[in-house]
Length: 92
Image (cartoon, rainbow, N blue to C red; front, side, top):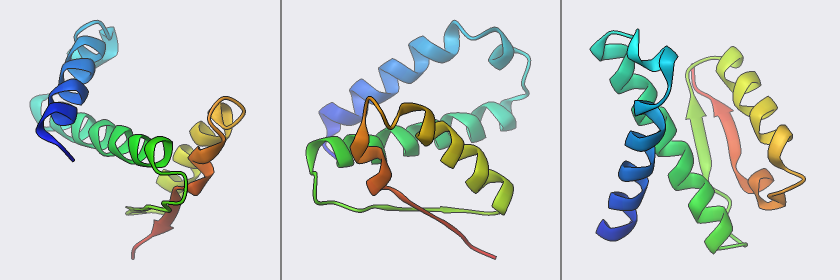
C-alpha cells in the first residue's frame, strides 16, 4: 500500500471514529483493536476495487467474527460486487 493511500485511510478512519459516540467509551486497547480491524478491512476493500482479479484472504480468530464480517459484506455486495473476492478464513 502506498504512503499516500495509507494517509487517506488513516485520515478517513480518524474522522469516522472521532464522530462515533460508542468508540469514545472504549479503552485504549479496544480502540486500537477496532482501528486496526477497520484499517485492514478498508485496505482489502481498496484492493478488490482497484484490482478486480485479486482475491485477498482475511484471517479471523473465530467463526463468530467470520459471520459478522460476512454479514456486513452481504449488506454491501449489491453496491460493491467485488467485495465477494475477499475470502474470510478462520484460523484456529
